[in-house]
Image 1: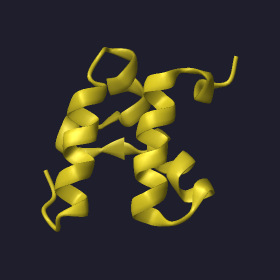
Image 2 (image 1 turned 90 degrees about the vertical axis):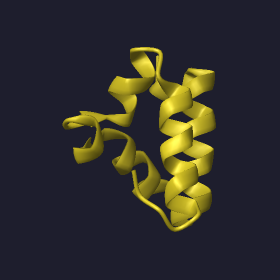
Image 3 (image 1 turned 90 degrees about the horizontal axis):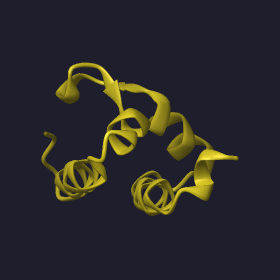
Amino acid sequence: MAFTDDLRVKRVLQVVEAISGDHDRAVAWLQDPLPTFDGKTALGLIAEGHSDTVLRYLASIASGFVG
């Protein structure tokens, strides 16, 4: 099963793609350690049930704030 089969991951991926403008960059971002979250990845946070936290983080990035 590809990680994009998970609806939560798909939603986050859509938002990251909208921000970055690039699908490959968005997929890579999902797997990059995030310093704001003690090095956890977005995929890890989603797996732990924190997709809303990731979406709020992305909203802060999109609005010009990080964290």
